[in-house]
Amino acid sequence: MTLSRRAFLCTLPAATAALSACTDRPADRRLDAAFVGQGPERGHRIRDGATSAPRGETIRTEVVVVGAGAAGAAAAWHLARAGVQDVWVLELEDAPGGTARSGTLPRSAHPMGAHYLPAPPPSYGALYTLLREIGWWVDGPRDDPLFDGRLLAGAPLERHRAGGLWHPGLWPEALGDPARNEAAFARFHDHLRALAARATGEDGRPLFAFPVRASSHALRHLDRIDFATYLERRGLSSPALDWYVDYACRDDYGLSARDTSAFAGLHHFLSRGLEADRGTRLFVTPRGNDTLVEAMLAAVPDGRLRTGHAVMAVDPAGRVDALDLAANRIVTFHARSILWAAPRFVLPHVLPRAADPLRPGDVTYTPWRVTAFEVARAPGGVGAPLAWDNVDVGADHLGYVVANHGETGPSRPGAVLVLYEPFVGRSPSDLAAARRRLLETPLRVATSQTLAALASMHPQIAADVRRVRIARWGHAMIRPRPGYLFGSARARAAAPIGAVQPCAADVGGLPLFEEAFAAGVSAAAWAIRRAGRTPDPDLALEPA
Image (cartoon, rainbow, N blue to C red; front, side, top):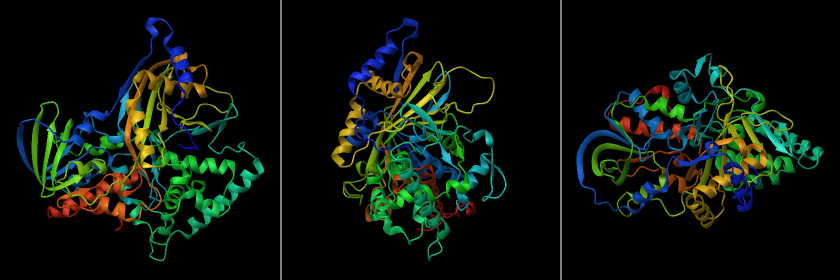
Protein backbone atom coordinates (compact mmCIF):
# COMPACT_ATOMS: atom_id res chain seq x y z
CA MET A 1 0.00 0.00 0.00
CA THR A 2 1.23 3.54 -0.63
CA LEU A 3 0.57 7.14 -1.35
CA SER A 4 2.22 10.57 -1.33
CA ARG A 5 2.52 10.79 2.42
CA ARG A 6 3.93 13.89 4.05
CA ALA A 7 4.07 13.88 7.83
CA PHE A 8 3.69 10.41 9.34
CA LEU A 9 2.42 10.89 12.87
CA CYS A 10 -1.16 11.86 13.56
CA THR A 11 -1.59 15.11 15.45
CA LEU A 12 -1.77 14.59 19.16
CA PRO A 13 -5.11 16.38 19.73
CA ALA A 14 -6.93 14.17 17.23
CA ALA A 15 -5.18 11.10 18.58
CA THR A 16 -6.12 11.92 22.16
CA ALA A 17 -9.73 12.39 21.18
CA ALA A 18 -9.81 8.99 19.53
CA LEU A 19 -8.30 7.33 22.58
CA SER A 20 -10.76 9.02 24.89
CA ALA A 21 -13.64 7.72 22.80
CA CYS A 22 -12.40 4.20 23.47
CA THR A 23 -11.44 4.47 27.12
CA ASP A 24 -14.35 6.52 28.48
CA ARG A 25 -16.72 3.58 28.80
CA PRO A 26 -17.67 0.95 31.39
CA ALA A 27 -14.82 -0.85 33.12
CA ASP A 28 -15.69 -4.18 31.56
CA ARG A 29 -15.16 -2.67 28.11
CA ARG A 30 -11.86 -0.93 28.68
CA LEU A 31 -9.45 -0.96 25.79
CA ASP A 32 -6.78 -3.66 25.92
CA ALA A 33 -3.61 -2.32 24.23
CA ALA A 34 -0.04 -3.62 24.11
CA PHE A 35 3.20 -3.53 22.16
CA VAL A 36 3.97 -6.92 20.62
CA GLY A 37 6.78 -8.54 18.70
CA GLN A 38 10.34 -7.35 18.70
CA GLY A 39 11.48 -4.55 20.96
CA PRO A 40 14.67 -2.53 20.60
CA GLU A 41 16.31 -3.81 23.78
CA ARG A 42 17.65 -7.10 22.44
CA GLY A 43 18.95 -5.60 19.24
CA HIS A 44 20.65 -2.81 21.14
CA ARG A 45 22.28 -5.37 23.41
CA ILE A 46 23.92 -6.91 20.34
CA ARG A 47 24.90 -3.48 19.06
CA ASP A 48 26.53 -2.58 22.36
CA GLY A 49 28.32 -5.91 22.44
CA ALA A 50 29.40 -6.28 26.05
CA THR A 51 28.18 -9.22 28.12
CA SER A 52 29.41 -10.77 31.36
CA ALA A 53 27.50 -14.02 30.85
CA PRO A 54 29.46 -17.20 31.55
CA ARG A 55 30.29 -19.65 28.79
CA GLY A 56 28.19 -22.79 28.47
CA GLU A 57 28.14 -25.58 25.92
CA THR A 58 30.17 -25.80 22.74
CA ILE A 59 28.55 -27.30 19.64
CA ARG A 60 30.28 -28.39 16.45
CA THR A 61 28.06 -28.47 13.39
CA GLU A 62 28.01 -28.20 9.62
CA VAL A 63 25.86 -25.04 9.29
CA VAL A 64 24.57 -22.32 11.57
CA VAL A 65 21.70 -20.19 10.25
CA VAL A 66 21.34 -16.86 12.06
CA GLY A 67 17.79 -15.55 11.79
CA ALA A 68 14.52 -17.46 11.49
CA GLY A 69 12.61 -15.17 9.15
CA ALA A 70 11.77 -15.95 5.54
CA ALA A 71 15.39 -16.11 4.34
CA GLY A 72 16.62 -18.23 7.25
CA ALA A 73 13.66 -20.57 6.94
CA ALA A 74 14.25 -20.96 3.18
CA ALA A 75 17.91 -21.76 3.82
CA ALA A 76 17.06 -24.38 6.44
CA TRP A 77 14.45 -25.91 4.12
CA HIS A 78 16.91 -26.20 1.21
CA LEU A 79 19.59 -27.67 3.48
CA ALA A 80 17.17 -30.34 4.65
CA ARG A 81 16.10 -31.20 1.09
CA ALA A 82 19.76 -31.66 0.15
CA GLY A 83 20.32 -34.02 3.08
CA VAL A 84 22.30 -31.64 5.30
CA GLN A 85 20.83 -32.38 8.73
CA ASP A 86 23.61 -31.04 10.96
CA VAL A 87 22.09 -27.54 11.06
CA TRP A 88 21.24 -25.14 13.88
CA VAL A 89 18.96 -22.11 13.48
CA LEU A 90 19.36 -19.23 15.93
CA GLU A 91 16.69 -16.56 16.43
CA LEU A 92 16.98 -13.44 18.58
CA GLU A 93 13.28 -13.19 19.39
CA ASP A 94 11.17 -15.65 21.38
CA ALA A 95 9.31 -16.71 18.23
CA PRO A 96 10.47 -17.19 14.64
CA GLY A 97 9.09 -15.31 11.66
CA GLY A 98 11.16 -12.15 11.36
CA THR A 99 9.17 -9.39 9.66
CA ALA A 100 6.65 -12.06 8.65
CA ARG A 101 5.84 -12.82 12.29
CA SER A 102 2.19 -13.07 13.34
CA GLY A 103 0.09 -12.69 16.46
CA THR A 104 -3.24 -13.88 17.76
CA LEU A 105 -6.27 -12.07 19.12
CA PRO A 106 -9.43 -13.83 20.33
CA ARG A 107 -11.26 -12.99 17.11
CA SER A 108 -8.50 -14.02 14.70
CA ALA A 109 -4.82 -14.48 14.12
CA HIS A 110 -3.22 -11.55 12.33
CA PRO A 111 0.04 -10.55 10.64
CA MET A 112 2.50 -8.28 12.41
CA GLY A 113 4.26 -7.48 9.15
CA ALA A 114 4.46 -9.18 5.74
CA HIS A 115 0.95 -10.33 4.98
CA TYR A 116 0.57 -11.67 1.44
CA LEU A 117 2.34 -13.41 -1.42
CA PRO A 118 1.37 -12.74 -5.05
CA ALA A 119 1.21 -15.80 -7.28
CA PRO A 120 4.76 -16.13 -8.63
CA PRO A 121 5.66 -15.96 -12.33
CA PRO A 122 6.08 -19.32 -14.11
CA SER A 123 9.84 -18.80 -14.32
CA TYR A 124 10.21 -18.94 -10.53
CA GLY A 125 10.47 -22.72 -10.33
CA ALA A 126 12.10 -22.82 -6.88
CA LEU A 127 9.17 -21.04 -5.28
CA TYR A 128 6.72 -23.30 -7.10
CA THR A 129 8.55 -26.25 -5.55
CA LEU A 130 7.76 -24.87 -2.11
CA LEU A 131 4.13 -24.16 -3.01
CA ARG A 132 3.76 -27.70 -4.32
CA GLU A 133 5.30 -29.23 -1.21
CA ILE A 134 3.03 -27.37 1.20
CA GLY A 135 -0.11 -27.95 -0.86
CA TRP A 136 -0.74 -24.42 -2.08
CA TRP A 137 -0.08 -25.32 -5.73
CA VAL A 138 -2.53 -28.14 -6.35
CA ASP A 139 -2.30 -28.99 -10.05
CA GLY A 140 -1.65 -27.73 -13.55
CA PRO A 141 1.52 -26.36 -15.17
CA ARG A 142 3.31 -23.31 -13.85
CA ASP A 143 1.97 -21.16 -16.67
CA ASP A 144 -1.60 -22.13 -15.78
CA PRO A 145 -1.48 -23.27 -12.15
CA LEU A 146 -4.35 -24.43 -10.00
CA PHE A 147 -3.92 -23.09 -6.49
CA ASP A 148 -5.83 -23.96 -3.34
CA GLY A 149 -8.63 -21.42 -3.59
CA ARG A 150 -9.07 -21.31 0.16
CA LEU A 151 -5.72 -19.50 0.40
CA LEU A 152 -6.40 -16.87 -2.24
CA ALA A 153 -7.82 -13.48 -1.29
CA GLY A 154 -11.49 -13.41 -2.21
CA ALA A 155 -13.59 -10.61 -3.58
CA PRO A 156 -13.87 -7.79 -2.95
CA LEU A 157 -10.11 -7.51 -2.98
CA GLU A 158 -9.52 -3.76 -2.78
CA ARG A 159 -11.29 -0.47 -2.25
CA HIS A 160 -10.19 3.12 -1.78
CA ARG A 161 -11.71 6.07 0.03
CA ALA A 162 -11.80 9.48 -1.64
CA GLY A 163 -14.10 12.45 -1.07
CA GLY A 164 -15.69 10.71 1.92
CA LEU A 165 -16.87 7.75 -0.19
CA TRP A 166 -15.49 4.25 -0.72
CA HIS A 167 -14.84 3.14 -4.31
CA PRO A 168 -13.95 -0.31 -5.69
CA GLY A 169 -10.35 -1.01 -6.65
CA LEU A 170 -7.30 1.19 -6.17
CA TRP A 171 -7.52 3.53 -9.15
CA PRO A 172 -8.65 6.95 -7.80
CA GLU A 173 -10.23 8.23 -11.01
CA ALA A 174 -11.93 11.08 -9.15
CA LEU A 175 -8.57 12.52 -8.05
CA GLY A 176 -8.20 15.53 -10.34
CA ASP A 177 -9.44 15.73 -13.93
CA PRO A 178 -10.90 12.33 -14.95
CA ALA A 179 -10.05 12.75 -18.64
CA ARG A 180 -6.41 13.54 -17.88
CA ASN A 181 -6.20 10.63 -15.48
CA GLU A 182 -7.71 8.21 -17.98
CA ALA A 183 -5.34 9.31 -20.73
CA ALA A 184 -2.30 9.06 -18.45
CA PHE A 185 -3.27 5.61 -17.24
CA ALA A 186 -3.80 4.41 -20.84
CA ARG A 187 -0.31 5.63 -21.79
CA PHE A 188 1.17 4.03 -18.67
CA HIS A 189 -0.51 0.72 -19.45
CA ASP A 190 0.69 0.85 -23.06
CA HIS A 191 4.23 1.48 -21.83
CA LEU A 192 4.08 -1.50 -19.48
CA ARG A 193 2.59 -3.71 -22.19
CA ALA A 194 5.40 -2.78 -24.58
CA LEU A 195 8.00 -3.78 -21.98
CA ALA A 196 6.10 -7.00 -21.21
CA ALA A 197 6.02 -7.86 -24.91
CA ARG A 198 9.77 -7.37 -25.11
CA ALA A 199 10.07 -9.84 -22.22
CA THR A 200 13.82 -10.57 -22.39
CA GLY A 201 17.07 -8.80 -23.14
CA GLU A 202 19.72 -9.79 -25.66
CA ASP A 203 21.30 -11.98 -22.97
CA GLY A 204 18.14 -14.11 -22.98
CA ARG A 205 17.18 -13.24 -19.42
CA PRO A 206 13.84 -11.76 -18.32
CA LEU A 207 13.90 -7.99 -18.11
CA PHE A 208 12.48 -8.19 -14.57
CA ALA A 209 13.09 -11.44 -12.72
CA PHE A 210 13.00 -13.06 -9.30
CA PRO A 211 15.51 -12.88 -7.77
CA VAL A 212 16.27 -9.39 -9.05
CA ARG A 213 19.92 -10.31 -9.67
CA ALA A 214 18.71 -12.75 -12.37
CA SER A 215 17.24 -9.89 -14.41
CA SER A 216 18.66 -9.03 -17.81
CA HIS A 217 21.41 -6.44 -18.05
CA ALA A 218 19.37 -4.65 -20.72
CA LEU A 219 17.58 -2.22 -18.39
CA ARG A 220 19.76 -2.28 -15.31
CA HIS A 221 20.82 1.30 -16.06
CA LEU A 222 17.32 2.35 -14.90
CA ASP A 223 18.45 1.57 -11.37
CA ARG A 224 20.41 4.82 -11.46
CA ILE A 225 17.36 7.14 -11.60
CA ASP A 226 14.20 7.39 -9.53
CA PHE A 227 10.84 6.08 -10.69
CA ALA A 228 9.02 9.43 -10.58
CA THR A 229 11.64 11.02 -12.84
CA TYR A 230 11.50 8.06 -15.22
CA LEU A 231 7.73 8.45 -15.61
CA GLU A 232 7.83 12.24 -15.91
CA ARG A 233 10.35 12.06 -18.75
CA ARG A 234 7.83 9.95 -20.65
CA GLY A 235 4.88 12.20 -19.96
CA LEU A 236 3.34 9.60 -17.67
CA SER A 237 1.85 11.81 -15.00
CA SER A 238 -1.53 12.84 -13.65
CA PRO A 239 -2.89 13.23 -10.11
CA ALA A 240 -4.36 9.71 -10.08
CA LEU A 241 -1.39 8.03 -11.75
CA ASP A 242 1.10 9.83 -9.52
CA TRP A 243 -0.77 8.59 -6.47
CA TYR A 244 -1.15 5.09 -7.87
CA VAL A 245 2.54 4.49 -8.58
CA ASP A 246 3.56 6.14 -5.32
CA TYR A 247 1.18 3.81 -3.51
CA ALA A 248 2.75 0.80 -5.24
CA CYS A 249 6.27 1.85 -4.26
CA ARG A 250 5.36 2.48 -0.64
CA ASP A 251 3.47 -0.78 -0.38
CA ASP A 252 6.30 -2.95 -1.69
CA TYR A 253 9.33 -0.89 -0.70
CA GLY A 254 8.47 1.66 1.99
CA LEU A 255 9.65 4.46 -0.33
CA SER A 256 7.99 7.18 -2.32
CA ALA A 257 8.25 6.91 -6.11
CA ARG A 258 10.64 9.89 -5.93
CA ASP A 259 13.06 7.82 -3.84
CA THR A 260 12.57 4.42 -5.49
CA SER A 261 14.88 3.05 -8.15
CA ALA A 262 13.12 3.19 -11.54
CA PHE A 263 14.15 -0.42 -12.10
CA ALA A 264 12.51 -1.40 -8.81
CA GLY A 265 9.37 0.56 -9.71
CA LEU A 266 9.01 -1.20 -13.06
CA HIS A 267 9.86 -4.51 -11.41
CA HIS A 268 6.79 -4.13 -9.20
CA PHE A 269 4.49 -3.91 -12.21
CA LEU A 270 6.21 -6.39 -14.55
CA SER A 271 8.07 -9.11 -12.61
CA ARG A 272 4.97 -11.25 -12.11
CA GLY A 273 3.42 -10.46 -15.49
CA LEU A 274 0.90 -7.76 -16.28
CA GLU A 275 -2.03 -7.83 -13.89
CA ALA A 276 -4.39 -7.32 -16.84
CA ASP A 277 -3.17 -10.65 -18.27
CA ARG A 278 -2.60 -12.77 -15.17
CA GLY A 279 -5.33 -11.42 -12.90
CA THR A 280 -4.85 -10.63 -9.24
CA ARG A 281 -4.08 -13.75 -7.25
CA LEU A 282 -2.77 -13.20 -3.76
CA PHE A 283 -2.08 -15.86 -1.16
CA VAL A 284 -3.41 -14.55 2.15
CA THR A 285 -3.94 -16.26 5.48
CA PRO A 286 -4.87 -14.76 8.84
CA ARG A 287 -1.22 -15.11 9.91
CA GLY A 288 0.17 -13.61 6.72
CA ASN A 289 3.53 -14.89 5.48
CA ASP A 290 4.29 -16.43 8.87
CA THR A 291 2.37 -19.43 7.53
CA LEU A 292 5.03 -19.89 4.84
CA VAL A 293 7.91 -19.42 7.28
CA GLU A 294 6.44 -21.99 9.66
CA ALA A 295 6.05 -24.51 6.84
CA MET A 296 9.73 -24.19 5.87
CA LEU A 297 10.99 -24.29 9.45
CA ALA A 298 9.25 -27.65 9.89
CA ALA A 299 12.30 -29.07 8.08
CA VAL A 300 14.61 -28.11 10.96
CA PRO A 301 15.46 -31.18 13.10
CA ASP A 302 13.84 -31.27 16.52
CA GLY A 303 15.57 -29.05 19.04
CA ARG A 304 17.78 -27.36 16.44
CA LEU A 305 15.75 -24.12 16.27
CA ARG A 306 16.79 -22.02 19.22
CA THR A 307 14.80 -18.87 19.89
CA GLY A 308 15.87 -16.23 22.41
CA HIS A 309 19.50 -16.50 21.30
CA ALA A 310 21.35 -13.24 20.64
CA VAL A 311 24.42 -13.69 18.44
CA MET A 312 27.09 -11.55 20.11
CA ALA A 313 30.18 -12.46 18.07
CA VAL A 314 30.97 -14.08 14.73
CA ASP A 315 34.42 -15.20 13.61
CA PRO A 316 34.76 -15.51 9.82
CA ALA A 317 36.74 -18.69 10.46
CA GLY A 318 33.46 -20.34 11.49
CA ARG A 319 32.67 -19.52 15.10
CA VAL A 320 29.46 -18.08 16.53
CA ASP A 321 28.96 -16.97 20.14
CA ALA A 322 25.27 -16.73 21.01
CA LEU A 323 23.83 -15.51 24.30
CA ASP A 324 21.03 -17.75 25.53
CA LEU A 325 18.89 -14.98 26.99
CA ALA A 326 16.82 -17.27 29.23
CA ALA A 327 19.82 -19.09 30.74
CA ASN A 328 22.16 -16.05 30.55
CA ARG A 329 25.02 -18.09 29.17
CA ILE A 330 27.09 -18.09 26.00
CA VAL A 331 26.69 -21.03 23.64
CA THR A 332 29.55 -21.40 21.17
CA PHE A 333 29.05 -22.96 17.74
CA HIS A 334 31.84 -24.06 15.41
CA ALA A 335 30.52 -24.45 11.87
CA ARG A 336 31.83 -24.96 8.37
CA SER A 337 29.32 -22.39 7.09
CA ILE A 338 27.43 -19.53 8.76
CA LEU A 339 24.38 -18.21 6.91
CA TRP A 340 23.61 -14.69 8.14
CA ALA A 341 19.85 -14.37 7.53
CA ALA A 342 19.46 -11.58 10.08
CA PRO A 343 19.41 -7.91 8.97
CA ARG A 344 22.65 -7.08 7.19
CA PHE A 345 23.33 -3.87 9.14
CA VAL A 346 23.82 -5.90 12.35
CA LEU A 347 26.72 -7.98 11.03
CA PRO A 348 29.44 -5.29 11.45
CA HIS A 349 28.57 -5.17 15.16
CA VAL A 350 29.45 -8.85 15.71
CA LEU A 351 32.34 -9.40 13.30
CA PRO A 352 35.92 -8.54 14.25
CA ARG A 353 36.80 -4.90 13.65
CA ALA A 354 37.40 -4.10 9.96
CA ALA A 355 36.36 -7.59 8.85
CA ASP A 356 33.20 -6.38 7.13
CA PRO A 357 33.45 -4.57 3.75
CA LEU A 358 30.11 -2.84 4.38
CA ARG A 359 30.36 0.94 4.61
CA PRO A 360 28.19 3.36 6.60
CA GLY A 361 25.07 4.15 4.60
CA ASP A 362 25.38 1.16 2.26
CA VAL A 363 22.11 -0.29 3.52
CA THR A 364 19.20 1.84 4.72
CA TYR A 365 15.84 0.75 6.05
CA THR A 366 12.33 2.16 6.42
CA PRO A 367 10.80 1.80 9.91
CA TRP A 368 7.19 0.59 10.05
CA ARG A 369 4.40 0.45 12.60
CA VAL A 370 1.81 -2.30 12.16
CA THR A 371 -1.29 -2.21 14.36
CA ALA A 372 -3.91 -4.92 14.74
CA PHE A 373 -7.35 -3.80 15.98
CA GLU A 374 -9.93 -6.28 17.16
CA VAL A 375 -13.34 -4.70 16.58
CA ALA A 376 -16.75 -5.89 17.73
CA ARG A 377 -18.31 -5.15 14.33
CA ALA A 378 -16.78 -5.21 10.89
CA PRO A 379 -16.62 -1.65 9.52
CA GLY A 380 -18.75 -0.48 6.65
CA GLY A 381 -18.55 2.84 4.84
CA VAL A 382 -20.62 4.55 2.19
CA GLY A 383 -19.98 3.24 -1.31
CA ALA A 384 -18.02 0.06 -1.97
CA PRO A 385 -18.29 -2.76 0.60
CA LEU A 386 -15.53 -3.83 2.98
CA ALA A 387 -12.63 -5.44 1.08
CA TRP A 388 -9.49 -7.30 2.05
CA ASP A 389 -7.41 -4.15 1.42
CA ASN A 390 -8.90 -0.77 2.35
CA VAL A 391 -6.97 2.39 1.44
CA ASP A 392 -7.61 6.03 2.30
CA VAL A 393 -6.37 8.23 -0.57
CA GLY A 394 -4.42 11.20 0.75
CA ALA A 395 -3.86 9.82 4.24
CA ASP A 396 -0.46 9.50 5.88
CA HIS A 397 -1.05 5.83 6.68
CA LEU A 398 -1.47 3.06 4.10
CA GLY A 399 -4.89 1.80 5.12
CA TYR A 400 -5.72 -1.60 6.56
CA VAL A 401 -6.27 -5.21 5.60
CA VAL A 402 -8.88 -7.48 7.16
CA ALA A 403 -7.02 -10.44 8.68
CA ASN A 404 -10.12 -12.65 8.75
CA HIS A 405 -11.25 -11.72 5.23
CA GLY A 406 -12.67 -14.68 3.33
CA GLU A 407 -12.86 -16.98 6.33
CA THR A 408 -15.05 -20.03 5.96
CA GLY A 409 -17.46 -21.64 8.40
CA PRO A 410 -20.28 -20.12 10.44
CA SER A 411 -20.48 -16.34 10.34
CA ARG A 412 -18.94 -14.63 13.36
CA PRO A 413 -19.26 -10.99 14.41
CA GLY A 414 -16.35 -8.64 14.49
CA ALA A 415 -13.06 -8.47 12.62
CA VAL A 416 -9.34 -7.89 13.02
CA LEU A 417 -8.09 -4.90 11.03
CA VAL A 418 -4.34 -4.48 10.46
CA LEU A 419 -3.14 -0.92 9.79
CA TYR A 420 0.20 -0.31 8.04
CA GLU A 421 2.24 2.85 8.59
CA PRO A 422 5.71 3.38 7.08
CA PHE A 423 7.83 6.04 8.75
CA VAL A 424 9.12 7.43 5.47
CA GLY A 425 12.24 9.57 5.42
CA ARG A 426 14.64 10.64 2.68
CA SER A 427 17.99 11.28 4.39
CA PRO A 428 19.78 9.15 7.00
CA SER A 429 18.97 11.79 9.61
CA ASP A 430 15.27 11.66 8.61
CA LEU A 431 15.25 7.90 9.05
CA ALA A 432 17.08 8.05 12.37
CA ALA A 433 14.59 10.60 13.69
CA ALA A 434 11.65 8.52 12.44
CA ARG A 435 13.08 5.42 14.10
CA ARG A 436 13.43 7.26 17.40
CA ARG A 437 9.82 8.45 17.18
CA LEU A 438 8.67 4.93 16.49
CA LEU A 439 10.56 3.33 19.37
CA GLU A 440 10.28 6.11 21.96
CA THR A 441 6.57 6.93 21.62
CA PRO A 442 4.78 5.63 24.75
CA LEU A 443 2.10 2.98 24.36
CA ARG A 444 -0.79 5.29 25.22
CA VAL A 445 0.30 7.87 22.65
CA ALA A 446 1.02 5.25 19.98
CA THR A 447 -2.39 3.71 20.62
CA SER A 448 -4.12 7.08 20.31
CA GLN A 449 -2.26 7.80 17.06
CA THR A 450 -3.25 4.53 15.43
CA LEU A 451 -6.83 4.85 16.64
CA ALA A 452 -7.00 8.32 15.13
CA ALA A 453 -5.82 6.92 11.80
CA LEU A 454 -8.51 4.24 11.89
CA ALA A 455 -11.18 6.70 12.99
CA SER A 456 -10.31 9.01 10.09
CA MET A 457 -11.74 6.31 7.82
CA HIS A 458 -14.54 5.16 10.13
CA PRO A 459 -15.54 7.99 12.50
CA GLN A 460 -17.80 5.82 14.67
CA ILE A 461 -15.47 2.84 15.04
CA ALA A 462 -13.76 3.85 18.30
CA ALA A 463 -16.53 2.39 20.46
CA ASP A 464 -16.18 -0.97 18.69
CA VAL A 465 -12.44 -1.35 19.24
CA ARG A 466 -11.74 -3.97 21.91
CA ARG A 467 -8.04 -4.74 21.60
CA VAL A 468 -5.01 -3.07 20.03
CA ARG A 469 -1.67 -4.77 19.33
CA ILE A 470 1.19 -2.63 17.99
CA ALA A 471 4.29 -4.08 16.33
CA ARG A 472 7.24 -1.72 15.84
CA TRP A 473 9.82 -2.53 13.17
CA GLY A 474 12.79 -0.20 13.50
CA HIS A 475 14.54 -1.60 10.40
CA ALA A 476 11.64 -3.23 8.61
CA MET A 477 12.40 -2.89 4.90
CA ILE A 478 15.54 -2.44 2.84
CA ARG A 479 15.16 0.65 0.67
CA PRO A 480 15.81 0.00 -3.05
CA ARG A 481 16.80 3.59 -3.65
CA PRO A 482 18.45 4.56 -6.95
CA GLY A 483 21.76 2.80 -7.43
CA TYR A 484 21.33 0.07 -4.81
CA LEU A 485 20.09 -2.96 -6.76
CA PHE A 486 23.03 -3.20 -9.15
CA GLY A 487 25.56 -0.98 -7.38
CA SER A 488 28.65 -1.57 -5.31
CA ALA A 489 26.84 -1.15 -1.97
CA ARG A 490 24.61 -4.17 -2.54
CA ALA A 491 27.59 -6.14 -3.87
CA ARG A 492 29.45 -5.44 -0.64
CA ALA A 493 26.41 -6.40 1.41
CA ALA A 494 26.01 -9.73 -0.40
CA ALA A 495 29.68 -10.82 -0.53
CA PRO A 496 30.74 -13.77 1.67
CA ILE A 497 33.16 -13.02 4.50
CA GLY A 498 35.14 -16.18 5.12
CA ALA A 499 32.68 -18.80 6.32
CA VAL A 500 29.90 -16.21 6.59
CA GLN A 501 27.35 -15.74 3.80
CA PRO A 502 24.87 -12.84 4.26
CA CYS A 503 21.48 -13.88 2.88
CA ALA A 504 18.52 -11.79 4.09
CA ALA A 505 16.25 -9.91 1.69
CA ASP A 506 18.35 -6.78 2.17
CA VAL A 507 21.31 -8.32 0.33
CA GLY A 508 18.96 -9.20 -2.55
CA GLY A 509 17.79 -5.61 -2.70
CA LEU A 510 13.99 -5.85 -2.58
CA PRO A 511 12.04 -6.18 0.70
CA LEU A 512 9.83 -8.97 -0.64
CA PHE A 513 9.19 -12.57 0.38
CA GLU A 514 10.26 -13.71 -3.09
CA GLU A 515 13.64 -12.01 -2.66
CA ALA A 516 14.19 -13.30 0.87
CA PHE A 517 13.29 -16.81 -0.26
CA ALA A 518 15.79 -16.63 -3.14
CA ALA A 519 18.54 -15.27 -0.89
CA GLY A 520 18.05 -18.09 1.61
CA VAL A 521 17.88 -20.79 -1.07
CA SER A 522 21.04 -19.46 -2.77
CA ALA A 523 22.97 -19.23 0.51
CA ALA A 524 21.98 -22.78 1.36
CA ALA A 525 23.32 -23.94 -2.03
CA TRP A 526 26.62 -22.25 -1.15
CA ALA A 527 26.76 -24.09 2.19
CA ILE A 528 25.69 -27.39 0.62
CA ARG A 529 28.58 -27.26 -1.84
CA ARG A 530 30.98 -26.44 1.00
CA ALA A 531 29.69 -29.57 2.73
CA GLY A 532 30.57 -31.65 -0.34
CA ARG A 533 26.96 -32.26 -1.35
CA THR A 534 24.80 -31.30 -4.31
CA PRO A 535 22.10 -28.63 -3.97
CA ASP A 536 18.53 -29.65 -4.77
CA PRO A 537 18.17 -29.16 -8.56
CA ASP A 538 14.50 -28.26 -8.11
CA LEU A 539 15.66 -25.15 -6.25
CA ALA A 540 18.16 -23.94 -8.82
CA LEU A 541 18.11 -20.18 -9.41
CA GLU A 542 19.50 -18.13 -12.25
CA PRO A 543 23.11 -16.97 -11.74
CA ALA A 544 23.87 -13.33 -11.06
